[in-house]
Length: 512
Image (cartoon, rainbow, N blue to C red):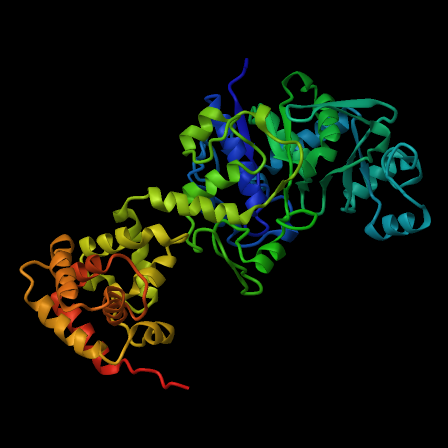
């Protein structure tokens, strides 16, 4: 590549960042890093009517959490700023004037009501070469009249002048050459005087050129606008520096047809946003991957494989590994079903790879949420607990269900386990067990287990019934890690208290 690779992710601050947008940002990032390039974050806030407070901050926080590092942007700064389009009005005005002066664009005064009436009266109306001379614009009006309307402050738009009958070629690195005839394109609005801001089409072309973007990597929903953008590059005389296009396939519903939506996540129980979102207007709260207990590395790995593969069967890959393998040669052209269950699998795998101490820190807020003060326990204790149960979890929050008995004695006991394991002679056997435990020279798991098992064998007791009744008093049900690992952690005194409490409180069910 002759030029240094420069890519941009350009979201609009109109709400939370959708997971499809995250994948677009990720592919931009992987491509840039793979080729030693730069990643730009540009905020496209030209649609003032749809601006949502807090959305820009949400975008930045989401990318930071995921580990998608921005080289240039509103927060990071850079030599090509400003990076917020609402702060680039003077630049856009200048380029609008360039097109007008070159006869590549024109001013139109048609009101929304007039346009609506024309559409109603003309089937399949399109503002183009076949209709523009019948409309209220500077091509069909006297120059003095146009000047007078502008001086009077009459609202207007600037439209791009598209010549019909030309085949426009779009070279896409993923889809190959796409050819569209210009006759199907309308004279798009590039600028609106009412808010003194450009539309998406003009702003993107100007910014991509001035910021020296080499590759525009975006969703396939923008493919229809690509021919217009090609023509705009030519109109400005920038054809030689036009970036390469890559239009990524959509993320699809896990079931059925169509694009993935928030409604799908609500229906099937998975997030479609990276972080929890609080709608400032409605107050509605939407779940996020972070708050749902996903690790950012797992989310990145999961998303990377939705529409791309490394060319082999490798699934678990770090960000660095993804970067080293990423290529559009292995991207799919068709949409990728959002296999959210696979996302849970990835999270499980990454939780198993995480250190016990890392997970212990993540577990502390879960403890607080369940009424346990983690400061009442040492970090070593919490870390050891996590190490015993993490193999059973898909999310950090699952640790509570697997480990709560390490932090609070059971208040009730599973009836199905009582029926199966608690017999008439069990209280007496548990009383004996207390004395055996008190007499152990060591309460370390590996040293405490043999003498207890020897006692059970010597007394001729049923091993399964004794050990499961023992577990029932400690845990509240017959589940959990190795029982002597539990007793080692909670200690002799707490073990004895729980057994004695079980003896008092566990009642044999009435026989029907």
